[in-house]
Length: 95
Image 1 (tube, rainbow, N blue to C red):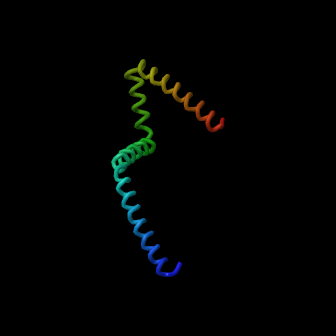
Image 2 (image 1 turned 135 degrees about the vertical axis):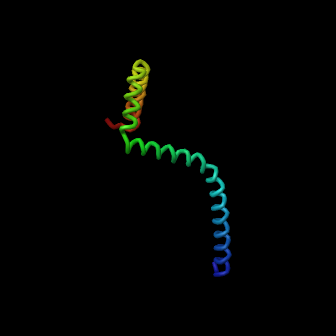
Image 3 (image 1 turned 45 degrees about the horizontal axis):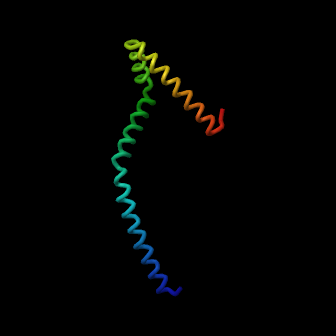
């Protein structure tokens, strides 16, 4: 290839990259709102992790005010925890 052909090829590639960047930006814009919601959710989880008294107090109040319902939810939680652990052990093979 001579320099003229290389320059033309470079122009084509630069134009193609610009089109692909625009397409990607347009496609990614659709995800902006759902990702913002996920970010807020993660911020909330981090806040609770940094302030463990809040979920502990909430759980204690739940147990004190609705013990039967709390026991039912604890059983469900234990059931799903065991399913998670068994699935993880089967899939990843760790103990």
